[in-house]
Image 1 (cartoon, rainbow, N blue to C red):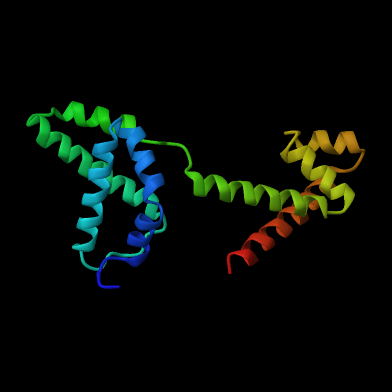
Image 2: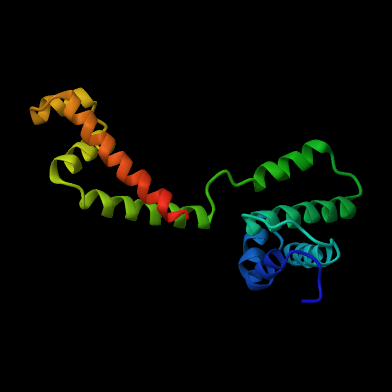
Length: 171
């Protein structure tokens, strides 16, 4: 590659240009402004030199493009109050998880469900009652006619198994 900027960020922009433009258009309400902002983002990143790797290149690109779009709007209006900029940025802020986080959460939930299904029956029942039915440990012990210590031990084993799996999967 002939550019010095982080290939992952520039590659992400090139590969996902259409979806980034669509998201930015929705946020800005102007497809031309979104297109111009993404083009300027590309140009600035190519000339920026070596960029550090980004864990979330999509979020980084949206922030850069949004800032560029706000700058473009400022130049067009010649005067924009600080309150106006804050209002635009507040409207654009997306506090929810992005697609990658949602996909990872769904994957993790499926893995947890599979691991729970493979647990011995009593451990699985205790785990489900405590974590999915929101019962106290004492309520579980009373309902299953076992000691609270047994409930604690089974939960600890279940938690250790889940923690071990996720620790191994991150290696």
